[in-house]
Amino acid sequence: MINFTLFSTYSNEFIQGTLLTLKIASIGCLIGITGGILLALIQTNIKGPFSWLVAIYTTIIRGTPMLIQIMFVYFLLPELGLKLSDVWSAIIAIGLNSSAYVSQIIRSGINTVGTGQREAAYVLGLTHFQTIRFIILPQAIRAVLPALGNELITLIKDTSLASTIGVMELSKRAYFVQTRTFDVLGVYGIVAAIYLVITSVLSLLVYYLEQRMNRNVTRS
Amino acid sequence: MLRVHNLKKTFGAKNIIADISFTVDHGQIAVFLGSSGVGKSTLLRILNNLESLDGGAITLDGKPLDISRVNQDHTVGMVFQQSNLFDHLTIEENITLALIHVMKKSEKEAKDITHSLLAKYGLLDQAQKYPAQLSGGQRQRVAIIRTLAMKPKVICFDEPTSALDPLLTNYVAQNLQELANEGYIILIATHDTAILDKLDAAIYLMQDGMIIETANSKEYAKNPRAYPLIHQFVLGEKNQN
Image 1 (cartoon, rainbow over the protein chains, first blue to last red):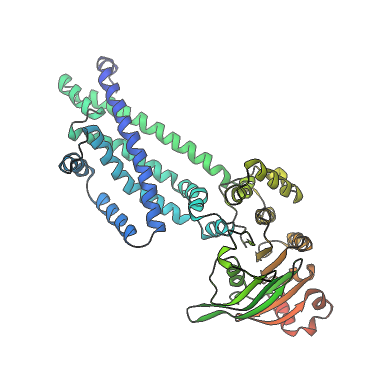
Image 2: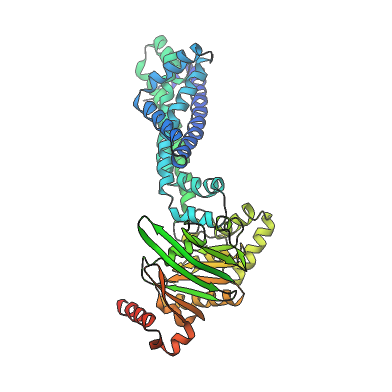
């Protein structure tokens, strides 16, 4: 059960935490999708060292915990002369992590687009870039939209790991509220409900997009 | 006039096209007939730069045809067996895409060209639909329009009637004949012999990457036995059906 009294007493904490969680998730998601598309295009279009580098990158990212990746970005980048705030360290780490997963999802989508589509575009005189932009990517993304939605939902929940480097996102603020109230179930009940609302809205959005994009493949 | 001289193509050790020569004038149709794997589709794919050629010369209207530029120059077009329309785009967008991004027409010009071609083929009311919402015959006609919009001199059709019922085969054959009458050079690769008596075309029977017999479709219809190899192939196809 959600304790509404607790929520109204500490509403500012929950709202501020939610806003920061949404900021980390949305920018991380933007980095994840943009980076993922670029990595997928490299893997499917460029043979040789670039493709191998992408394979190595995705293997490392997918094979290590995100918690450790956040730590690496937070502690390693300053050593290399790149000073980032804790929030931006979290955003970069989460975005980079997501890009590895998104790249593999998009790559599988690109592989579902038949060679006939590429050949038709080629014969019409479209350039390689135009073919990717107008023909391949829209169809690939449509094919993997449910998987992409799942990845973004995971990303939203993973933002809670930013708390480990002191980012005052939703779960970190919840922790402080809990230390003041000692109402563990009440506080985390509210936090769970907020995450559920965010992920449900995203699920609905993905479902709507899926319906919209698939209307053309269903016979009327 | 399209002149193909001693064309050769190998895949590994296999001669897909051993040695092919033919000429087709504007307004004429050439039908390359044969079973699967004889090299007829490969021939059309070479002319559209979808496959490289390993030997031979191709000229168009007396000038050497640079195969590597046929797509950018819109000299040769291709209508595929499965239409290969872009599933995520409307019929209108399928046609305007290359007009806008390849031929650099304005959106209005591209739409005007598209609408007039769709109207000519009785498909104007389908402009905002998606390919999956059209019948096989309608998709085939959209694919033809998409190619025509680029104003090629040569149009290649790969198995244009193999997925169609007899009624639609008649209709597509009529479209092909009309295109030839408008001055296009039409090349057709097919194993569908039902189309032969509906066209005024040169028939090239292919086997093992070579043309083994040639006939005019009208002459063949009058006296099939004068062309024993084509006749045998036609009878074989009819028996299979």
